[in-house]
Amino acid sequence: MLTIDKYAAIDIGSNAIRLLIALVIEQKDKDPVFKKRSLVRVPIRLGADVFLQGNISEKNQLRMRDAMKAFDLLMKNHEVTRFRACATSAMREADNGSEVAEELKKETGININIIDGNDEAAIIATTDLKELIQTEKTFLYVDVGGGSTEFTLFSDGKTVDSKSFKLGTVRIINNMITETIWEEVESWIKTTTKPYKKVSLIGSGGNINHIYKNSGKKIGKPLSYFYLGSYYDMIKSLSYEERILELNMNPDRADVVVPATRIYLSAMKWSGAKNVYVPKIGLSDGIIKSLYNEKIAAELEVNN
Image (spheres, rainbow, N blue to C red):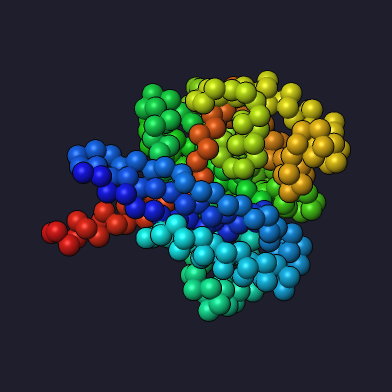
């Protein structure tokens, strides 16, 4: 007998706000199946407000309110049974982040959890990365966002170390990254990966997903360092307008894709990785999986 529920995750990032609705299909004595049903992305660039001015502008507060109201209606229409909203670096660094979250809860009924970088990495770690992280291999997981990048090293199927840096695409395009931050990231990656002979990258985030989708690679096959380097040289040679017109990029992707690619390439160089795998797994997927795990834990408590 099948049990099918719909769960939802709201990811409030520095570059965009996303609503993921997924089917959670349970069958007796089998692992659950998580199937993405709908993904809505609204390019409200909160990071441009926060990283430059210190708070979320009134204009973007109104845009967030409208987005949350729309997400609430979509969840009701899809008959979602469980959901969670999480906000990352932009809202946690905004002087008025908590105040905005409270106001949004009053107006939309949606409670926003403002999480830190470690929480973000932990939520993502609950996803089906285990299918990719083979026990005999070592992977550096790199999740590039608008405000920060999370790095996690996996080896023998276990987490070795993780760290979050304020190295994000929105910060970079607004000239807010000092050379010191790049040096700190380089030092951490080299030190953390040094004991391992061979490291591969796992790339997460909208930019690497976009690159992978347009690479023509079969699902599961990695992108090479050479390919990513050539792609980086190509997009750098084009203007913002040319990336939109010639590469068919969305306007809010055409500027951040350049610094994002630089971060992935740098991580590959410093770790000695020759390939980057792109499983298309991110914070939203982790939220869905966390909600399911919490439900199972609650059921076990009741039965015990």
